[in-house]
Image (cartoon, rainbow, N blue to C red; front, side, top):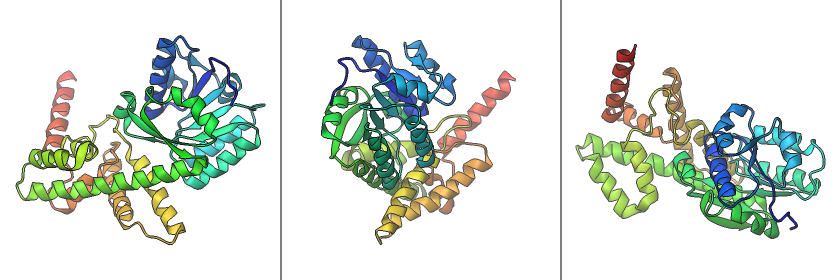
Length: 330
């Protein structure tokens, strides 16, 4: 894999996760006296924090891809990715460029996109990330990466220790990285549902939530404790106008990929289907109130089904206090 000594990096897609990752890369480029990160987003003003750090905005994705050696992508879903790839491959020669795609899509989408990029003599690396926005901001994501070994080696220094605590090499087939991510999403969703039931049982049985959380932390580890914290802190139901740590819509999309993939293989992911049903109810609850919900909002549904209400006391108190402060300001 032949790249310039100091390759030009570009970033496409500045959602909450994309902006967090791009910010950490730009900080890395600055601290190591490397070329500033170029970026593009459909709403270019999303990149103002990057610009303040020295990032360079591009007026179009075509401009970005033609001026960069390594292009990182973080978009919302399969259709957006397909459209973007068609735009990029029509922008002019992309020979020898490396595309690193962090988007979570169906493995078949990854295989199709990889084939298109490869047919233009460029390299495609699937690099889905594991973690919520706060984890991305801290540069502590986990990344699964798959594609040609020489390209993986060339880009890993821009990933590990920059936006990720570790990089898992899944092999030469890009779609396998997405298969791993899809499986992980299913496990996380199942954990959210399981802990929602456990905390709801504790609530209706007068077992303090903090006591159960302590057990989860010590007996099941930091990851389970992180999910538990989202439930008991009220993060599962963000305040009006507050962004979720991980959007419910993305949770539904990602788990849906897993459920559909299992069906294609003649298998049923019953826990995944349970999550999707509850997540659909949680989305309706949020939509009726004009609120964006977290992917862990299934907790509210489990609570509601148990007769204790969607909102925990901590959520009601938080929102009530926020309303009072708003009234005082007005």
